[in-house]
Image 1 (cartoon, rainbow, N blue to C red):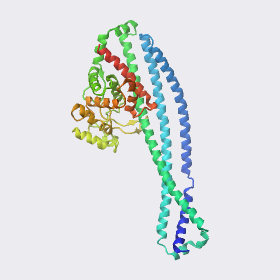
Image 2: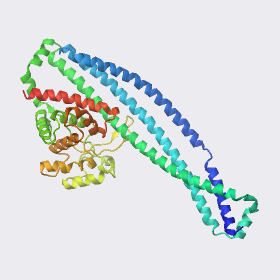
Image 3: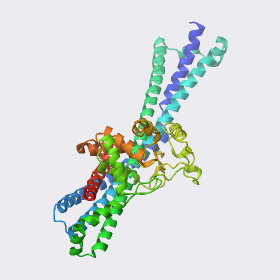
Image 4: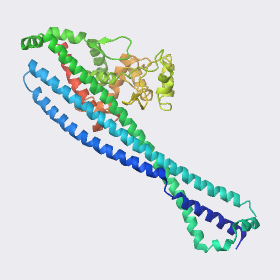
Length: 449
């Protein structure tokens, strides 16, 4: 037998021992299994609660539909508002349960990622040690190997042993490749789960805002009518006074230099509608929704904000930061004091996802760059996401591309604007936008009488 073959057998046998040692179970794996089982048990309990709440929500929605078809009286109006508030309270609770369920799934995914990473590190170590051994053995003399290994021939039974170990090494390399693929899939899943959590937290903010609006509407209605049906009917019949009130009502849209009234907002939305084919009432509804996503809108990167609110911290470093600098440089704006949205946070204050959305339409920099030239083609000037007319127009163009040029396509377009899909998990957003658009359309019609 040649010296080279003898040396190679020694290396292969050492590699076989390393392969076998890689299969040994660890205490950490047992701990992880227990943690995963606990998470699964918690998720089952959450799903049972969620099913019960969703059943109650369905009942309230049936009652609301029934009341809506009844005569417009004060007591029916108050009852409708109260039923709506009860449904919204349950929807907020349901969304909280979904977020909690996702938190459990994220925990499970992180545990799996940790375990996969440990396994990958172990496999890399095994392969590295075999390669190191090969290098070392190539530099030893046959005499030295015989002296240190003892009776070498007793370790080598046959050519079959050689082939078996070679197959083992090949399997080790294949396993390492599979582990890499598994780790990438787990990391993608984690990213999707975190994005879903961010979307659900945004929807929960909208639900809370709608609940506050409904309670405020009920309170104002009782103050204006003093609880009397005659006063309510008189208020309904005074259309001219109502039209003026609608027109002068402040249109709450964040990140504009000055607040505008509803009449001015309708004027801008009508202009954008003429350019895009998107209904003005629907456009206003989407933009209202975007600006009411929560207190995070436009509260980062302002003059005087702490370093942790800087665009360099809250904005996605690869996707958005370079593009944010392009946008602010073109507009001659200081990137260090230009307001952007903050990241969402869960109930424990943990950061979820990234911030960095800009202006009334809440475009992130990477998305804005896909629309700015289309806006400039209409306005004849550099597009500015913080300019209310540019923001309205960009949103209208995006909604039109999503199918909002016909009323039948508005719900789906709103959903795509929010999350890029029509995922039923986020249906509250589309439902809320459509309902608000109907209310805005009524206001616009009254205003134009």
